Image 1 (cartoon, rainbow, N blue to C red):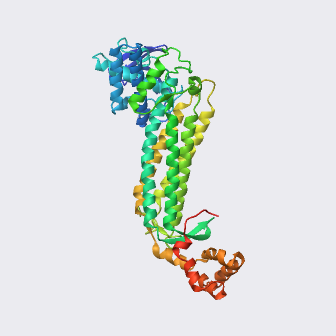
Image 2 (cartoon, one colour):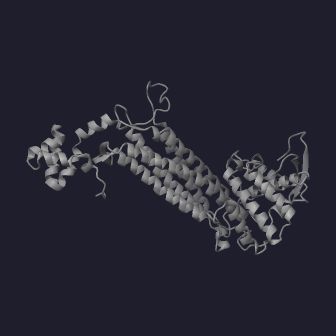
Length: 472
């Protein structure tokens, strides 16, 4: 990347030659080359601050570990530590400019960190940027490390942060559905299977079901976090730990655990851990499952609120905006719709990640950057989708009580409640008669002499019709 014409520059050199770097830039020649090579998405890695935080934690842990085992002097380790603390606190994020889409298994991202940390450390020590004889991106910041162990470790730390944020929103949405379940507990309605009338239930039971299915996803995502705490830091290039003191692995694990506050563990086989990306597939698959279930709930909300005159019209979704530029008064279910769209994107991202996981070869999978892009973006979008569904839709849903009551008075499906007492064949005959004559099921059952009026009233009570129990 060329410095702007007339701008002050500094000269940096690598194995491929020399380049002029903007004098005020914290990044260096490796980032400059990456900017030339990977002008793909137009989006820098800084769009995912959780990844930046994770990488800063890893570099900080490595510096502390190197100092502890005597692989790095205390002065340089302290400068690296302070620079990492700045990044964790939100500073210098505008210096992380390599594209989220990059070849090289994340080397450009790792070097972006090495260079920014080195130049910030030089600044803290009172040296000009680029004076790497005092603090070098490779020899000091990257000591005892490789992209191949720092990138996946930082990726995992960042994912845990993103998933915890998602879980907080998921729990709030679950609670919102439970609140609606209690609010709608006494409202009897028609249950449906295959879009056909089935048997009675309460609207409260329907919304409670939404809450329960979200709670199950909460547990699955918690399980994914436990798997993400296993890292390969100290594996260096392929898992053999080459160029690192054998003591570094445990020292780095210990310091990373202290920095994050999580029970970080080292993978039992670092060669396997360096080549395997199964945990990222697990996270993606779990997220996709959650997204598909959430999308199904949104489909139900759109159906239940459809109409208002020619649809189900059982619930009222909060009106958020005008629904048409030509049809006056039309209001669309825009919040469930946008959540559907996020779910579709999550499913597509899972396909991308699966293909990237399969494409790994021998001792390394080179496609970590696209996996990181998929997961951080999907987690970000899902978290926002959960919030907008809760705040802008679920909390404001009301029941159309008159409509539901009218449906129940003419609902032939209540005949199912009589089957244990009059038999399937008699119930079928009476149901057909009720549909053909538009008659009341209750009156037909009493007229048949199979049950008394008192028995019919008891069997048609809301408590009897909607009691909980195993489905048949």
